Amino acid sequence: METFAIGNTGASVVSKLNANFTELIAVAQLLVSITGCEMAFSRKKLGSQSNWAVVRNAANVEAIIPFSGNWPDAAALVAHAAGTDVFIKQLYDQSGNGRHLKQSTAASQPRFLASGLPTSVQYNPGMVFDGSNDVLLTDDLISFSENVTALCAINALSGNDKVVFSVGSSTAGEQNWYAPMTDGSGNTRVGATDGYNLWDRTISGRRGVGVYCDPTPVPIFLDKQSGTNWTQTLSQPVAGNFTPGIVRLGGQAAGTFATLQAIACGVWGRQLTYAELVLVGQGLGFGASGIVIGDSTIAAYSSENEVALYLMTTANQIRSHGCRTIAVPGDTAAQQLEDYLALATKRYAEWVIIQVGLNDVAYTAAAATISSLQQLVNTVRIQSPFAKIIIATMTPAYNRWADVPVDPATTQAKWVAVNAAIKGEGATPITNVDARVSSHTDSLTLLVSGNASLAPAYDLGDGIHENNAGRAIIATAWNAALTTLGFF
Image 1 (cartoon, rainbow, N blue to C red):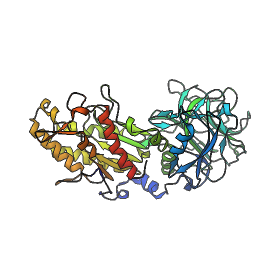
Image 2: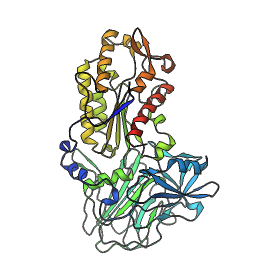
Image 3: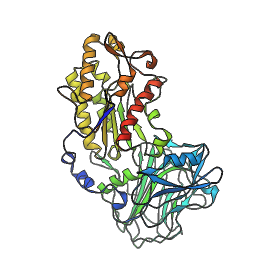
Image 4: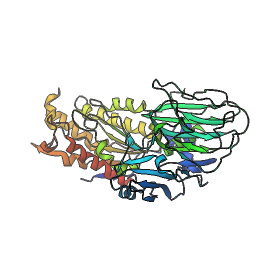
C-alpha cells in the first residue's frame, strides 16, 4: 500500500472562491510583487534575496544563513549553533531596497536559538528580544508621503505599553507611527504620538499589529469573519508628510524596549487592499503554515503528546511558520469543521492535514461519515485558498469496537469503507485533495481474526489511542507527504 498519492482530484478552486478571494488568487504569491514594498523581513522567502540573516553563535562566530528553497537553510543554521545560543546580527531586506535591519552590538542582538533550539509559539520560531536593550534598526532615514502601511507579527511576552515596532522619527511633536503592546486585559496601550490608525488583534497566541497613516482615517483589514470589521480607529492622523526616520524592531528609545518574540515585519508606501493584506499575512506569518484537524488520536490525550510535536522538528519549525492543531478528543468530522470555521487564521494556511472519523464510524453509517469528510475537505478548499490538503486514514481500532452500541463486525466494516474512501477507492472516494496518507495505519496494525487492531507496542491500553511511539509513526507519514509536496 502506498504511503501517499499526490494530485488534486477536485474541481477548480477559483470557481469556488467568494469575491474577496478572486482578487487574492490573481496576485502573485510573492510578497514583494505587491507594489510599494519599502522593506520586508520574514523567514519565508518573499523575493529574489538569496540570504536570510547574519547570525552569531555563543563563540562569537558569525555566519550568513542563506535561503534554501523558500526558507532559511535549517541544516546550516543548526550546524552553526552547535547546541549553543544563536543571535541575529542582521536581517536582510527582501524588498530589494537594501534597508536591512541591523545590530552591531552583541549585547543588543535578539536571540533566535537557545541551546540550538527555537523558541516557538505553535511551532513558529521567533526572535526573542529581552526587553532591556535588544533592538534591530535600519541605517538610513526613510521618507514616505502620508500613505504608510506598516505590519509586524509578534508574540508579546511581557512589558505592556512598550514599543515593538516603530516607523519614522522619535522626536516629540513630529509625525511618528508605532505599534505598542496591550495590557493584560487586552486593552490597547498607545503612547503619545501625533496620529495614526492602528489595528491590533490577537491571532492564535501572537499579536498582529499594523499602522496605516493618512490625512483622513482609512480603516484596513487584517481579516474578517461574518462581515465583522476588526479594524480599530484610535485617533485622527495628522495631515502632512511622514517625518523621515529609521525603522526599529524591538524598541524605540530608552524605557520603551519590549520583551517579545518577533516573527516578521514589513512596510509599504501605500494602503494595501484586503486581498493583499491576506497575502501579506501569509508571507509574514500572521497564521500558522499548517493546520491539523483530528480527534483524540491526533490531539494531546492523557499522558501522550499531540502528533504535531513529532512532526515539527527543529528543522521543520525553521522552515515554516509553524503548525496549529485544532484536533479535539471526541470530535466528529462535523465538529472539527465548526472548529476550523472559527479559526481566524485559516486564510493564511499553506497546508491542512485531516485525520478524523473514528468518532463518526462508531455511531453513524459509513456513507454519512464519508459525506461529512467530503464537506470538510470542500470547505477547507474554499476557506484556505492557498493550502494543499492532505487527508490521512484512520488508525486501527478493532479492539475498541466492543464498547460501542453496534457490534464490532459492523463497525469494523464501516471503518474499512471510510478508509477506502480516504485512500481514493470504493464507490464514493473522497475528492478535492492534494495528497493521501495511509502508511501509518499499516504500521500501527496488528491483525486480530483478520481485523485491523492497534498493535500492543503502540497501544496506550484502550485499543484506540496510540502511545507516543505510535504518534511518532503518524508524524513520519505526514512528514513524507509534506516533503513530497515541497514544504519541508
